[in-house]
Length: 323
Image 1 (cartoon, helix red, strand yellow):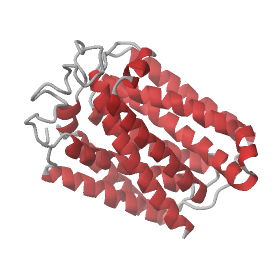
Image 2 (cartoon, one colour):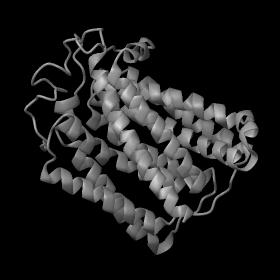
Image 3 (cartoon, helix red, strand yellow):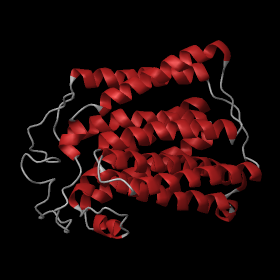
Image 4 (spheres, helix red, strand yellow):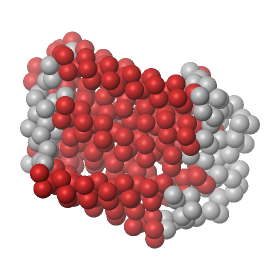
């Protein structure tokens, strides 16, 4: 029963995060764009009402994620977040009034079937409740170092898909590390109470790194199309989280001949992700904002998300199609 609840909460978290991502992406189209990281970006977004809807989705996702992590292994919960990619595209179709092509539905089915097959074959289980300090040091150094290097690589690239991929991957590492810290903190809350929760360094660690990951994600969504940043985010989060679950929490996965169906499942997920990344959906309904975007995030502003037929416009004529 506990395992079922963990999966249910993880799926709800993926849906909530997908909704938050689409709404945040729409907000990112309105605010001004820059070649460098802008702290003012967050202030601009605060003046954009749709951004608050996105943040509400993120908050619900965090709650569901915490409930999933306290009831199940990290190696089970986080890979389910791969479902965020098809959910994001499906929700985007509703928000931007676009229809999904047949190939798009095949890609969604490949991700769902592949994820189910991979998790069923791997059957992650067990694990320690609290990793030793030495492993925390190694995990923090590795993940934070990789995030820093990817952020530097992104700054050296112009606005476009390559930059979005670098920032999306950096955000994915941040979210995976946040989940690992959150699992430790929620276990402390469950076993030792509220006072111990607020005395735990992991509590402040997941809050701080989560904010950094959110900042990187906001910049990733402004740097290029969602089809570039979203696969890097969802697939990267799943793979890094699986690695942290095995190495940090000592969770076990089945090996031997089980590697064959696991590989097939992962291959289906990758095939589906590549298929979805080829869709023109988000590129036409949520492409990078022009550099001439107005600074105002008010509803009356004439921005790319409101110009009839423009990228990001609900009234645009583009439909879901493959390149």
